[in-house]
Image (cartoon, rainbow, N blue to C red):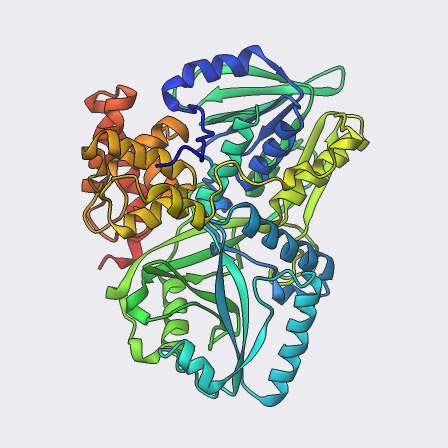
Length: 549
């Protein structure tokens, strides 16, 4: 490899967990963020880039909740135009385009077809999408275009839509939501912040009527300790109300979002399809993502356990109807299903408004002196949500922002990488990894992929695949253990990678393979290995329980 591309990572590992916990307990932070999703990660990054001393804690793993349960799109929300949310659409489209430039290996354009069933509908949709292009500042990867029925069949030969008149083509961007969240949190750490998973905030502590930290517990050891902070930000998404004062009315209306995953070859989709349920008329995406296709999402009120949200059979049947409507020749059946994932969205309560109409804009407020909350919003606008929060905090006198700082969070992600630079720097590496693995490393790790390839060069055995049929290699696990705070087996299999989601069966064997490798690095004994495998298998099975007879 050439030496032009420096590797900006510093170790961020569960091996050093004790020192991170000690730091949390001994330091007074300007801001403590509770919640390790994309919102909390964006706030940590925005603060750290400004040199403000900040820490983030998450009771589970980073991206455990909503931020690993999305449709895996950075998009402008064209459907919100009909609700009159023009400001939100403008913000989302422009942030989507910033993400595409700031993180090109992970945020990549994908064509999406929307069907028209009459000439009148084609005219209306054309007007919507011209306005959509305008709101984006004409910064889309490509502006929308009208497609004839013939052109649709040429692009997506397996789509057979009854009553189709024509279509509209627009471009959004596919992402890996959990990996994006990890990289944003890591960007905050590399910029000077602190972030630790499996640390739960149990209670806000106050002195003289002002918030000055939290009582916390290390979920791994069970030890309790205090984290001192001049300000605390509640960025816990669907869990927002749990940290709020008991006298405050509930703020969040959790909405359940479900997706199923199939092999791309099962239905033969090429790009993306924005469609509606033939039974209920609800909108959803059918989205090609590498070798797989994701179908989702639902959007229904949820009153169950926020920590244990899974797909049920009726939701699978709902998606099966959509697939067989759009792709009748696929004859999709249960055998074609790989698995599913389900989570909740933190919709802010609006009396008398159904979930489909509920605002997707963020809500920011100072709950009490020094205690702020940020919730709602969308993954695509995580950066601007953080900027708005910081301005709100500055207006309240909680932090100081230098006017000359401007919008500094628009800088590129440190691990971002363009394909030309990647190809230029790996072509002479001398490492014999197959093309699929190299593409996987580029898309998911960017510059971090250089470190993974270099480790294989030093030790070719690290180029062995973790599990047959998948591009993930042992060096990748080693990298995540050293640089991405992987603490438990489920962190690696469910969030740092898609191995669990793309593996229908043999979860116990998969978990065992990863646990043994992690044990070498983290010093686990056999009991810990067994516990880790059992917990991972429990979750993996719940993600596919409705497949069982």
